[in-house]
Length: 71
Length: 259
Image (cartoon, rainbow over all chains, first blue to last red; front, side):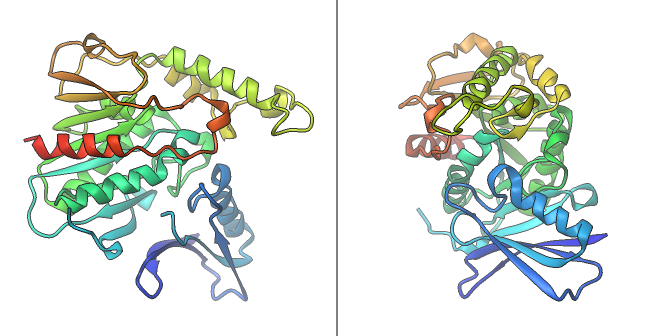
């Protein structure tokens, strides 16, 4: 199982992120996935979501995907 | 118009198994009405994302709370993209409407939806207890929509601007514009025809294809032309965000005047 959290952060709480935290955390490695251009957090064709859940399966890392601007 | 601080936008998960992602645009004080923003599907949802945020902020700035959310299998909600199901989307609107009532305290929920978002909100209107609907270029003929998306998909896979060699039909089977679409969802959309409207409905029509009779006459349906025409089906604009100040102004004015 995994825990998924949506939250705001940053100096002015102006960023939105979603963290997928494997149950075996704390993990040694974390991954930050940034949005690209038009497409918000979820990434092209929900690629970031898929990465997120691939990570859950492999339990390699804590992963955070966020939208600096376009949330 | 008041400026809402970004802190007033709260991201969270809700519904069974906390499977649905939402962003609640809060306002201060008690309210009578709130707006549920029902997204379209596929690339339309990507292209409308920023406009939905602008609309939610504009509504919150007028003191009307708003909830943006993603259906199961879309956006930041749980579920694989191939699992998107029409009936689940309708059920998710019901859950989201209840969530919005709970968070805002509003009794009256008005739904807004672009394209299939408007169609899904219409389909959910009774179960969700909606007080009104604003539908922007809603899909009124599911079979026509399926044909258009099939045509766009066919043109896309052969587009020399995107691919050095045309992709085979088998290579991109069960996809529309890069998004998985199951045979089940395809059939569900293809069968979609709206019932006579049972709630006050405003149709914002940029395509010039909607008549007042399209929704039947069981409840007041108003059709308002909106310019310019939105290039929903222009392959060359697929990666261009859909933004419209007239749309935001029309929706906020309508909600302001609504009971």
